[in-house]
Amino acid sequence: MSLQRARSAEEYVEWVKQAVFEVDDLRDCYDFQMDELGRYPSFLEPLEQTVKDLQQRMMDGEYHFGKEDLPFIELVNRHGDDIPFAILLRQINETHRKGIDVGSD
Image (cartoon, rainbow, N blue to C red; front, side, top):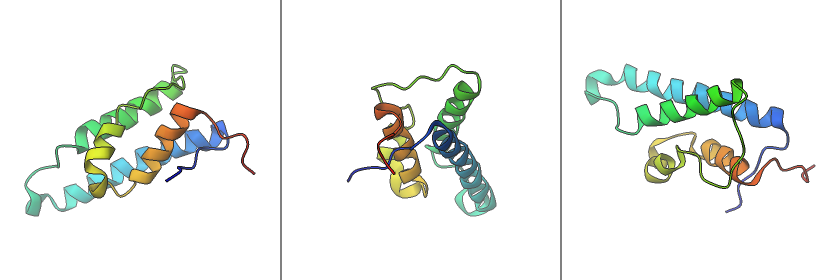
């Protein structure tokens, strides 16, 4: 399966903002169900931290595209069925590794 990459830096930044929103929303969902579950799933805190770290590096001007996977991708690969926005995270990672898709219309 070929993943879509961001077509501009602005779109890429928006995807990261959306991922932060989604991870916060996922935490809120677990908060709501905490009486039933008793605890958060083990992947939630590291996922939240790595997504927010990515956004912070962007805001601080310290972000650089790279050939390596972003830190959260291992969590996505192991727990993707439990992460409703796993495709978005995979698209962010694909853009990170391969750059902005300037050839798309």
